[in-house]
Image (cartoon, rainbow, N blue to C red; front, side):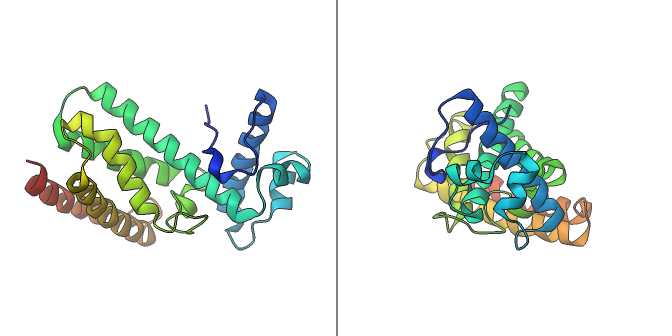
Length: 204
């Protein structure tokens, strides 16, 4: 089930279930259209038509398409966090290597299959809203999410380690997907080995 994005990205947060469902349809339509036409040709009117809602319903939540894409990026991060959390719960104990595999593989799966994710992901490709440094936001989320699993405090050092790992992975994953539609496996494996070497030095 899709989660409603954080209220800061919305003009008005949905209160009733029907309103929340309408917001979900709007963001789903936005994601689909991003894959079809790209960000430049995305319009609020086209989103309204695809979602089968009045244009006023779109403007009830969003002032423009940038705010709408920002909300989609936030929803992506919420869904990603939920996937990583579930993956780690199923894995049980395993240390940072299991955590790294979960973080990386869930991201790659969303990159390959989640509508709109290849263009927007967490806002890195189209910096939107007030979050001009999406990777800092992602690194902080992972620090909070994984600190208990790793048995460490989410302190400044851990946040810096995750920021470096996220920045490195972000650059190399996008390179892999520029080289091949599903992500070049050799580049992905090189990235995995690079991250393992770095994390082993700082986390072991």
